[in-house]
Amino acid sequence: MYHWDFYTVLQSFDLFLIGIWTTFLYTIGSIALGVVVGLVACFARLSRFAALRIAARSYQELFRCTPLLVQILWAYYALPMLLGVTISNTVAGLLTLSLYVGSFYAEIFRGGINAIDKGQREAAAAVGMSGVQAMTHIIMPQAIKKMLPAFINQSVIQVKNTSLLYAISVAELTYMTSVVNSETYRPLEAYTLAAVMYFVMLFPLTQVADHFERRMRRSD
Amino acid sequence: MTEPVISVRGLTKSFGNLDVLKGIDLDLMPGEVLGLIGPSGSGKSTLIRCLNMMETPTGGKFLFKGKEVSPRFRGKGGSIGTGDLRREVGMVFQHFNLFPHLSVLDNITKGPRTVLKQPRAEAEAVAMDLLAQVGLADKASAYPSHLSGGQKQRVAIARSLAMKPEVLLLDEVTSALDPELVGEVLGVIRRLADQGMTMVLVTHEMGFAADVASRVIFMEQGRIAEEGSPEDILRNPRSDRLRGFLSRFHG
Image 1 (cartoon, rainbow over the protein chains, first blue to last red):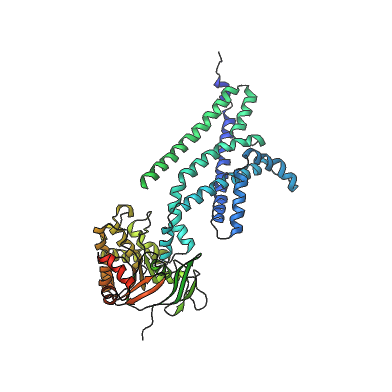
Image 2 (cartoon, rainbow over the protein chains, first blue to last red):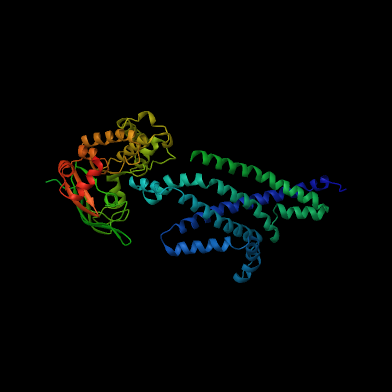
């Protein structure tokens, strides 16, 4: 019978805290950058210029159709060889995560905007609004409500995806758990604890997404 | 002699291979109420949508108060852009197209505040006045989803009027309404006509067109087939096609 010993593992709780904090920073940073990238890609795809549409589409497909882990390893080990410069694991990790999530955000934003009836755009134009005014005052406020559940779900996935930075030794929660494990030789407790921590962070978020989804269905 | 507000010569519109408007000549005089009638597919909705550049004409001349209308948002040189045109030429849609995320009051003040940069207090005073005119002063804080179709359309009319347009375009504004709600909307339009508002209306309500319009145009296959006073067009149609079209409405 296995003898559970969380006490030993919990003595390294400061290491877990470092991991949680780092995971949090990478999540927030890559979501913020990803929103910017996603918005740019989204409007490029809605643009009337074919070159912009093709460029945005190519970016999206490149990042959506290759595994994130491969992208991270490529950015950290391969890209520096191509460019002849060193890239820190922080930069490689943050950049890859941001570009990856941005490609999905772009699709979520585009879907939300396209879901708005074209009569809304016409009504905005009919009172003399410019395209930008119609977008900011009429289309976006409605589209954001529609895209919120999908946006939160993608962000939940993003929190979990930071764990792949383990592969390039970023001190996020999964990596720090492996450090705890190597210090205590208690993998069962260490990784169970890590799983619990991820769950505690993410469960409230999925509940929020569900809440918005229910509210959206009611108001439709 | 007074100048026409809108003047159109040889206006054409094609969607791909489909020629929807095949050369329209039209002058709209101040204070005139022009009724556009015709079978579906005759081009009357496309024509009215060209008059505020909701559709960009394929060819022909389009003047607003003597100024050429440009397809760009801002006009260049002597031409007037679509942005400026639409401040002067309001449009009310068949399906209302109210902004669902805004209250009735904000629906009406949004245009004046963002486009005309009116201060909130001023825009709201105008909006309340307009709501009173369309009989919905008590609905100012309601959201569109809580209104009936007739109420929505009256708000949509108030929203257009808040821009103080020279011309109001009404594109089948009662077609999506339950029959018992048509009257309240027509009543509002009737009062606007009495106040001297220049209007173009696409309608299937022949009785109403006869009553409110000062001139009626019968369109067929992308052309103006017949035009004249409501009596001439609706009571003494010359062509067989118009007679046939009208007989379907008189039952």
